[in-house]
Image (cartoon, rainbow, N blue to C red):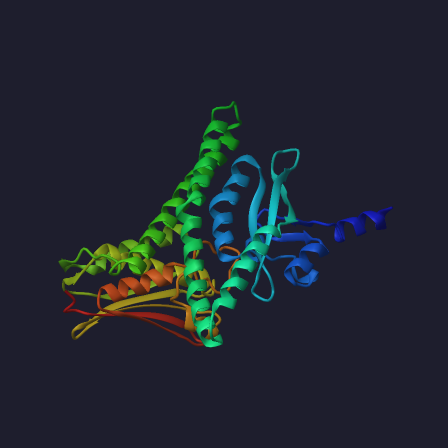
Length: 372
């Protein structure tokens, strides 16, 4: 009987996944492994969101994860799994949080059902488009352009459309729960979850709007001021990040004795993105170092961290929008931080470069002081 139940679990006609409190896979059946082309033994300890396509991952982080935190379940979510060969596998998913007798999170269980109709329709459209092309070279060029446009459109729709409404629904649900007679500890948890959702949504909106301005307009707009003392601006950015990661060491060396013509809020945003990236990906036992100085007619700001070097293929795509590289357990966001930082550098007529070696990874922003 035990063997029969085990076979039913492993070879069920649907995928079944159990997650821990951090969203990492504890158990997954062979059906899921077969769907995505990944060995079953490689699935445990991966984060579930790492199995999703970019658009679905954003949907999951901004919608379904808050729903699970607020009300403990979601039903019939449309998800795209990322297969080992880079394709997509469409599923419908339902999830439920399991709590112990004390109300503490024990696990999250997900059931995924295959959804082939939509993918069949998309495949038919792609085949029809391919047949209409006259040469293979023209076909590849058009497909590459359309795929890029389609992916960006999908990401914009995911964030600017209903994806941002669903977190609002989660906040509303949490607010309704707060009206009940709940223990003080549970109310505190709900307040914290609501506030975290608000901060998360605000950051998503700001990043996507900046991306839209840079992609669809004439670049990120600047509010240039002629007499900015950058030292205090950078000190404030460092102070804010130190509050968020009190166990990490950030070393500063600023030599900025005279005013600089720039947009201080955008420079602060650039530096915050670089520091946040260094704190996320750098070695936890080594300091993050930020230097800023003026050499002749050039402002230079660099952020460096220790840790493993960035692989060469990732270096080539590092400043592309929505590129996240290797996803760490604590990593969040849409992969726009470095792209927006590079766009801010361009808007100031400057450059943002990266070097990565075993000794350190260093991002360097250089800006001519005659920027208009």
